[in-house]
Image 1 (spheres, one colour):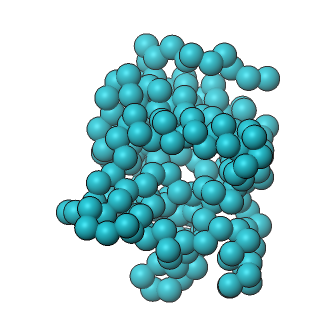
Image 2 (cartoon, helix red, strand yellow):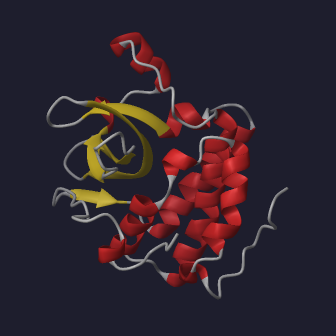
Length: 194
């Protein structure tokens, strides 16, 4: 897998999602700090990785979809929080990135309660935790190399969420991810696990 290649190497028609003009998105450092804080809370069992990052929503055509929340932004003139969600590719529908209001997204438990849908193909709790660990390490590199917004969007779009549903799959993917040229010269501060 070629991570962070040119737009032509990704799905055809990939468009970097734009934010409303009055939105302030996370910086690389803020994303890293959020991931570090959330991983501590998950490790202390005060937060669930899958319930916090695996979300259900409806697109503009009212089609329900599952996806992973990858970034957040806040509107300057309100308390509204936007979440950048990477929706799963399902059947003929390509995975895509889009900003949505947090109030329009639902956890696994809420989706079951309100819409009677279950996430049958998403990651286990352990797998989602390991994905967040990978993201933390990726954002150490993003901070060090000062990744642009566009580069982060390409990373999120290319990340194979659908294939990483078990802890073993995530652990096997580590060497593939950090073997990509985008991480050349970046030394992981954490040793490879298991």
